[in-house]
Length: 329
Image (tube, rainbow, N blue to C red; front, side, top):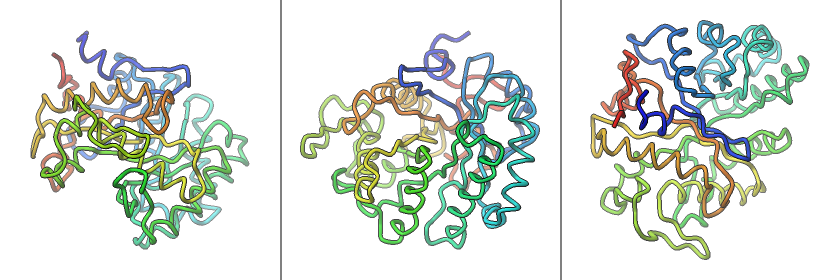
């Protein structure tokens, strides 16, 4: 077994706060191994949590008795139908209840990176409420939390981090969702990619700031000092949550990664450095919430050859489709 890969992502990094590192299993590809082989790969490298983006029966079936925790997504295209209570009840029964004795569900993620201006936005909270009600009817609401995954573009301001605030259109969308999460003891999921922030402004953002390798403080913001863009991004999100009345809401980083090919700074070396430093860093928390480990999901398990349009989208995998580790030295 490759020592570096074991250190990097293939051992579960449990902490005293029961936070963990998981790996996202995206399937936008036509050359990936069968679900059972994927589960076996998770098992072989002791990866304890998987995130999937739809309730794929073959994946869920393969997880029976595995002890791998599962974060399962509601695809965006299903949000409207699940805003109806009966449809949500049927969905929970079909994909959750039928497996709940043998599969360790962790979260149901209702929608991924929904734009507040999208027509689907109006259905996110009703779908969350209906799925929660269906879980409660099955006495599963304490075991399985209901949330949604946002992108940081919902922030209308983010620099300095203390000025972080949701844009007006985002605020009206996210505030009732955040209230729902707080009332039910569920975290907010956020996809955080310093790579995309870096390539959008290479003139003002140094690569070392995005890769956790800056030797000095880059941003001073009141009493907080930021050495890396990841912390600053979360700092802005924490500030935005505080402004809408949720200063203590837990944030789970539901995706983070770096591509190994296909664009600016997309190299194997940079990806290796990013993943290694990310895992080491989230165990310690951020300047805003020190000593509070951040539950984080690495994106992604495999390169996905049907993603796009940018070439980098096809090269976020920790493994190649033939199950070979990409970062083995």
